[in-house]
Image 1: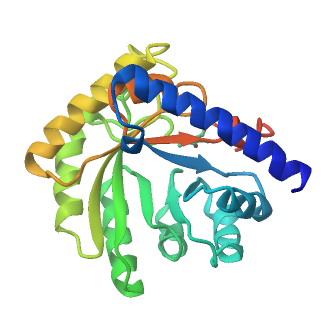
Image 2: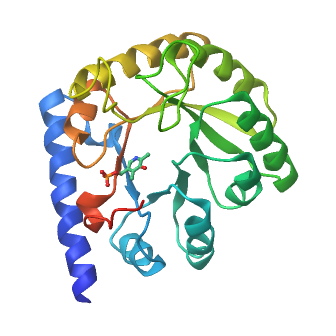
Amino acid sequence: MTDRKDELAANLARVEERIAAACAAAGRAREEVTLVVVTKTYPADDVRALAELGVRHVAENRDQDAAPKAAACADLPLTWHFVGQLQTNKVRSVVGYADFVQSVDRSRLVTALSKEAVRAGREIGCLIQVALDAGEGGRGERGGVAPGGVAELAGLIARSEGLRLGGLMTVAPLTGEYAGREQAAFGRLMDLSTDLRRTHPTANMVSAGMSADLEQAVAAGATHVRVGSAVLGVRPRLG
Ligand SMILES: *Cc1c(COP(=O)(O)O)cnc(C)c1O
């Protein structure tokens, strides 16, 4: 093994231990939580090494970086998640490799995703990104729709050809009432998920938690944690 692969294996083992411990503490089965490794800013070789180490879900947040990386890794048994703010002019490219878009936050994006999914003959899993720090009717600074906008967007996704409503995603807010209160924020996301599943029972994915707060997300009930730096190392500032 190369040094880098050793390093990734050690990091992955540490993250795996954290997830297992958080599941045990919450009385949840380990299988209830899917690890999604966020590989943004890291090269395709790292993605390949991670796949060899057993990782099956990876995430990217910028199409410019993700598209060539996904192409270079097309032979690997990976599920690709797109987790970044997405402009409609990038949708055609993203639909070419992403199995899930976790950052759906406006109707124009839903329309574009549906059109391109149909054109490509693909079905894209869509998670609604919730901005817990947005004012009602507003959008979050890092993307996301306010909690009051979830139901309408969910209905639109559910009616759209080529799309499947997967559930909800959030990033713990840095400002507002949930700043520094990750577990309360993730608990609020779980409440929104419970509401959503009353009308869309199969939309049961809850994507929350990153390197710094995956324990709080697992405790709250997250089904997917998105972990970048704890596996790959601290990124250079951009990204
Ligand atoms: C970068 C990123 C992550 C991973 O963050 P880390 O702190 O590196 O674990 C998770 N979710 C989103 C949306 C991201 O952009």
